[in-house]
Image 1: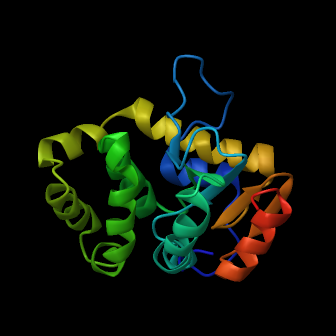
Image 2 (image 1 turned 90 degrees about the vertical axis):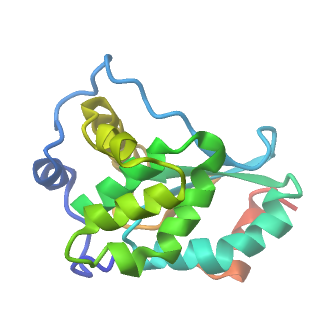
Length: 203
């Protein structure tokens, strides 16, 4: 779960109020975000991850567990990982927006950098400036970052991805993983994840 408050996640309506998102029906004029997929499209098992970029447990998964899963399950074609945004606070929303500024082929690399540098920007006096610096190192100019932040359709699409997690899978904390018909909440060890993946048919 996120370090922000170390409490159960805010309700969707409260998140909507804090972020300024719409709480009404999904707008047909706002297209969904294209999927961020790590792995082969025809992998037999799909793992959906809902994560917040200011979540310590998400950071642990991405920096400690995911590299081993990538080697054993993703690179071997056994599973594919689908990343979905579930920002728990305004800073996480800005970080998610920055990640969406990158080309899809560089998305996971930028997410890894964001988690590695999270202590520097998430709790700095000016998180936006810290994120902009990370963006510049990733080839995203300040004007491009500002344009992404000002894109109402992008922020709405991120909000609707969060909404979808709550409505479809009852996501209420991060990270949450959907493995087949099972919901795994919280960071799991490599061994725990491997057991769940094997049970889902990723042997």
